[in-house]
Length: 403
Ligand SMILES: *Cc1c(COP(=O)(O)O)cnc(C)c1O
Image 1: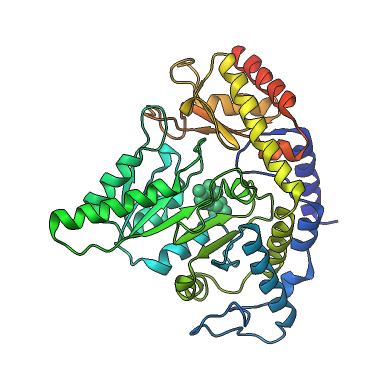
Image 2: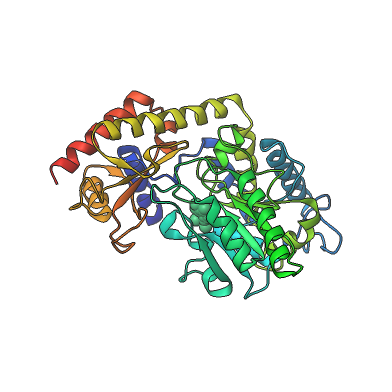
């Protein structure tokens, strides 16, 4: 037997024996595993199937794509069904980062200005971090969260009015509250109007992009307001709350379809990973079921129950609680001696997996950080209910008290 399978077996055991609280992880179904482990990995299929092709794109570059085409068209249809939308969808991005790269490429030129939320406030690397392509290729302007960690919507208005970006980005990797997409869109309109009235210029409305990588499952289940109909471009991963194969998706208004498709292929990727497209199609089928809806409702109930318990135990939560699948504990006031890194390492020793996270007004480096992020999506898949998460909160408290 290959050494690889020994390693996989060890990892399987680790997954079975730990309490998984990393907010971006989940456990996929047997069917998703079967699809991504299928013979579709053998097939080259650069390009797009006929129906998803928009004038200018060349269809497929290889023969033998008849079933691959059927699969990709089915996959696109299923994802539109998940989000009840007629937006165009590209199911080929290899990951969330690749989806964001292609989305920017579709509508921006290097040097253009993007207004987004930075990593320290809960944004993602690809939202303009200086060590990421996004921070190197584009002129980034960041909006802030207030002292309690809530998005400062007024600051979005200010930043757009002052900097006249080509794109405004909403979405986060570590934000425990519902994001008001309509409010952001209204603030963009208002900023464009005021900017033009004030300077006598003709600044056009920037593109509004939503990266819903974390909350996509909640959007699908109706537990978070939907960005469809509001945002011009929507990117997501399929492996977080959507509980599917690792991968990315880009949705856009139909008029941007050709630009988005070209930015994915040939703009930034070669042949699609068709076994992963199959995994994404199974993920979409599952996300349409009532069982999935109930799962997401349980994820949110669990997150709220755990947040309440941590508060009872004297912990400080960023924004004081949660509306979604994750919560952020801020140790800076209540436990100033604890760093996020030390907590992460100590919990690791006790079989509890989570990650350190920056908090609002962070004083430590991101490598240390003063908080941790906790998500309930993975263990809810394992069957945990409110009382189980309350027990986990108690156990974490016990471990921290002995640190
Ligand atoms: C996870 C995440 C991504 C990137 O996903 P990868 O598949 O890891 O590249 C992008 N944006 C946000 C907001 C995320 O949380």
